[in-house]
Image (cartoon, rainbow, N blue to C red):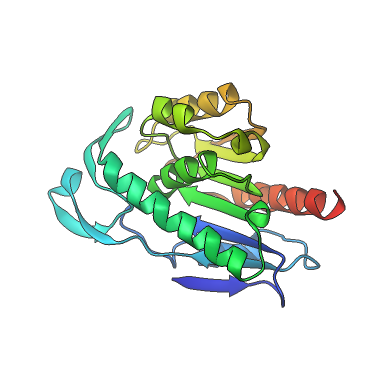
Length: 222
């Protein structure tokens, strides 16, 4: 796990989950490009997924938050028990931040692709509202399950949802289904699309930073 702090005595934390086959170092380099308010110190936590066999990749062992049985742009069959285990591990990281002085209401969850699926499940079913969820090029493996398990606190957790219009790994349609589920839950969210594939781009990174600045500012003045 990698940790990075933008200043002393962080007031907020961002737990950022990488995608399939990557690791915690994947998104660390983007922090300087977010354009964050220097007066609001933030701790970034980049955990590593466990090394497990991934069925859709021929059983090859790689970093994965859960096993994916079948992989297609418009559908997923996954190990839901594995997803639940990873979600529980992220809850432990949220609790760890609370023990270090940053309560859940000041913790953001961010996730790309498979990591975003974990962020969706964890954030929308958490017992307390979070500072926000950033769901990037991702999906909900079981939207009905998430909707059924969503807590009242989730309505007070804002979301930043972004997707590439040319994504051939996680289709835009899957991203839209997740977005629509969030809307049905009554959550506040922003929806962004970018002319890109399964990746992130600089305008998206800058928009994420502006959104984080807006959320941290509102919590400091409320």
